[in-house]
Length: 264
Ligand code: DGL
Image 1 (cartoon, rainbow, N blue to C red):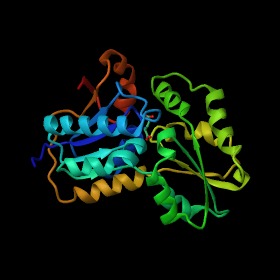
Image 2 (cartoon, rainbow, N blue to C red):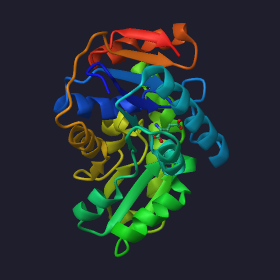
Image 3 (tube, rainbow, N blue to C red):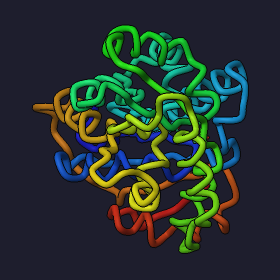
């Protein structure tokens, strides 16, 4: 591995920026490529086999082209479905993003945790296993809110998210049996923390929202400890989709010190 080898941070869209924001805080120096599979967005409404094939295929090609020192799958949907498979085929360290059920279980006082994710994420055995391991003595209420993915994408393109969309997602979770005791909500999609303020307005004041981004950033820092970093090229964001459309996100990427946008 070379000092200029990048960290490759992958998501279906802009959700990975919530992970990147935390990563920049603890690890500002490594060269970085942000990869957005805009041509495949949204993942949450696709089948397991479609997501697994797409993510493994793209990460294989991207790893060949960019020779990353580490790959972060900054997407709960892709991670809960394809993490094991990607680890088997790629030789670089892979850090996934999975629903923050463990920290939520440690925080809840009422014992009732809400979880907002994509349709694909909430039905995964991976989530059942996290629940069994860390929250078997709690109640975990899962709700799929795929419409929040579009809302977050729109927000980062400078469009105000529709209040009805946010309300429908929050009310959907709050309509589940036992939800009146929810004091902690897991944002189990990397897009959703981009809407945390808008969502919080629909919950009892003091409700806590948790996601795993800070833990992922710490894990990456740990795995790259002692490595040399030399940024010989500016960090960039690449898209599998249309580059002109992607340019609308330039200000959002610029906030994370990425000023070069390109097509994969
Ligand atoms: N950001 C992704 C996640 O964490 C998924 C969004 C999507 O493509 O549906 O689940």
